[in-house]
Amino acid sequence: MMLRAPAVAGLFYPANRSALSQTVHALYERAAGEEGVASASPACIVPHAGYQYSGAVAAFVYQTLAIPARCVVLGPNHTGCGAAVSVMARGRWSTPLGEVPLDEAFADRLTQRCLGVSVDAEAHRAEHSIEVQLPLLQYRQPSFSLVPIVLYPVGIDGYRALGEALADLIREDDVPTLLIASSDFTHYEEQADAERKDRLAIEAIEAVDADELCRRVERHRISMCGYAPTSVVLVAARRLGCGRGRLLRYRTSGDATGDYASVVGYAGLTLS
Image 1 (cartoon, rainbow, N blue to C red):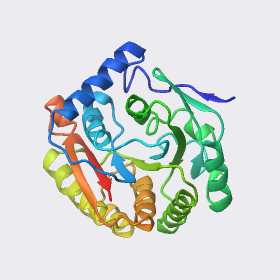
Image 2: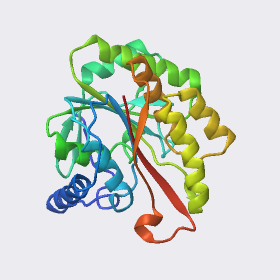
Image 3: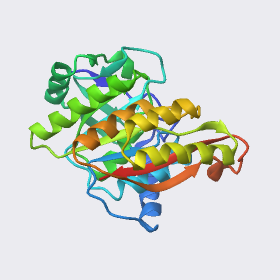
Image 4: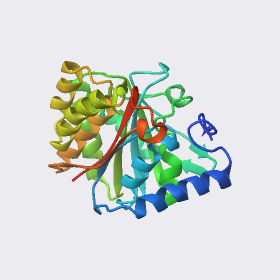
């Protein structure tokens, strides 16, 4: 059985099981101490930077949700490896907290339903955008199965085809499923500029409007690395009946480093 080994353990999060457990526990303890809104959302958007930068935002989103039996996690392809839309369909993913099985049947149904999806493990081998979500999910739900999808920007027609296929497949079985778009927002701009641009993207997400998100990213040159997976999740969420997004947390790397001259934005939202 194919085992996808951790690629960024020791870089984005601790490689030692005990240290990772303590880190994740601390993130959730911090999230539990902040005021939040519980949600039965079928979809969310969370960041994927190192835990010291964005882990608190992701944990705050996850602690408002009941993590179900299956998580479909979509992330951007940062590495340049693999097909345009790549699903890993066989095996398990390993983290220091244990192994997560892939939902092979769902992946097979997806590739049959949406011809633009390729089975491609190489696209996932070194990609961090999905991996960093797993310890946070494992802490809340030790027995979930994973459908990992990474993609390049492929245009709104491609996002719509994939999003509609995901929504229809979720409707067709009885397995509770959470759709997760893994994305950071503006990269390496001054704090005020990052906040302004990110607000434009967040407004489109709150409206559950994938077309408008794509337009705003292009028009305002928003360096949101995961706007493609976010657009797919918006299409799927809209088809599943979601009518609004809720911003739960927004932070920047400057909040962790104290350097606001060049920041990365991190937003956590749920869709319902």
